Image (cartoon, rainbow over all chains, first blue to last red; front, side):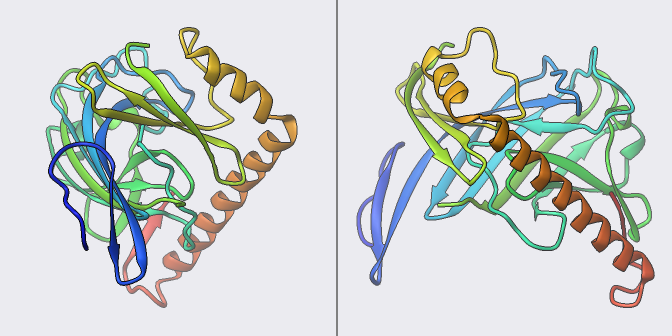
Length: 156
Length: 94
């Protein structure tokens, strides 16, 4: 890639004959239940976009789930770009470190961005063979921590 | 809204509003709004106006239909996975 990236903001460069845009900045991760009730535990994360590829990270300790429906799917809104449409039904998968996520403790957990969406949710497995998406009640109010990183493609 | 609105981009066939703002420190902050979301009362007026213009009933219906199709595709993947023929013991419950 030609060009110089030395500070925050948009840059551009060229690989071969393909011009790439580059941008970095912040996004605000807001946990919500499926009906849209938001947690007070918002957190600023960072993003980097090169061409269509976006990488986001974010982490938070002591996640509050006050007023959220325990039986509702836990979603984390606020991604800086929507995911591209992707075949196969599930979406883009990232990596996650977590501690004391309630009944998901010691489970395998990965963040997943559904196609065309701008939120991620948590897919978990308790035995390595059967996966589910986590509901709010899988966390501990004011007691769960998470740290995620996801790389995905956006539309343009 | 503490950040200063810089630009609104319209992306996807479903008129997602891709927002870029300038933070107090001069960096970028981004977010995306979809037509099934309720805008905050203190949302930028320009965003409210754009949503009102673009998020027609037709767009909302198309987005709802797309989400239903995605759910059906996911369920199909789950069913195929649960058959265990291609992925051994790998299963996924949506």
